[in-house]
Length: 125
Image 1: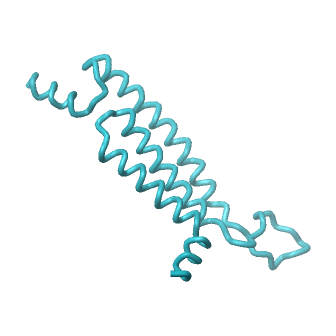
Image 2 (image 1 turned 30 degrees about the horizontal axis):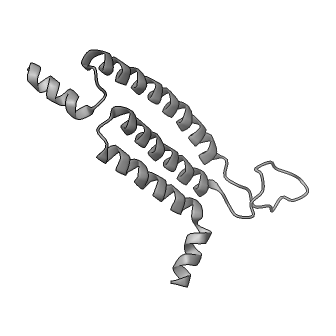
Image 3 (image 1 turned 30 degrees about the vertical axis):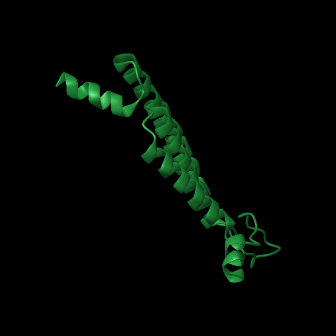
């Protein structure tokens, strides 16, 4: 048990990312309100960003700036951080678009409950 606890403490960013992802997935699967589903999706995205950035980190690594004084230094990989920055920008734009769609659905159906919208749609067809 102590070995498992030690591994969890050492790998806490991965553990936190898994917990966040599970919270987001639980929210998406159990809530019918579209705003809450969108928040759950954003929580899952944040967990993925955390996981990738943690994977790019190296304990004891230096900032990836080459210096002639220490050519053998261990450097942190900057690519995951750069990719996640791009992912965050895409995530924000997709969230804004989803919010616009949810508002449009509210204007059309008078509710943001996915089950009620599906019922109303079945009644019309």
